[in-house]
Length: 116
Image (cartoon, rainbow, N blue to C red; front, side, top):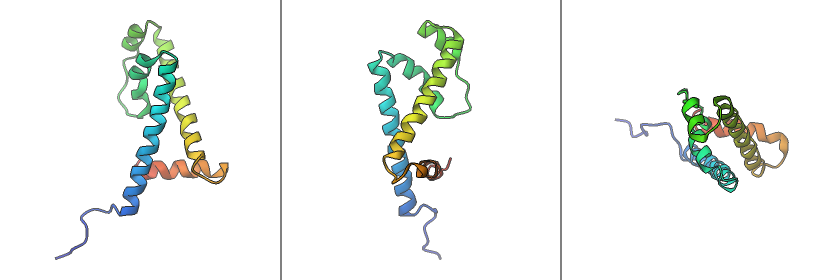
């Protein structure tokens, strides 16, 4: 009978995973605050699903109707949201490393910790 853990999550891996989740949550909250400040909270709520990278297709025509914009404008808004998310993520990660050339490696480790 083996007394080894049934999973491969070491305390270090779990710490890294929790750190990654916390960092991503901070970035999403910052982005949400930016949208709220710009009086675009509803737009954020409708488009934030594009940040997850899930394969489900958003109904941009329904989003466009609710936001009173064209479907293309709603797609562009989603693109700008993802772009700003990446900018904020890079800034948050840059604050945790010693030099800028470590940012990409750290982002890679971040998503590796999440199993992405």
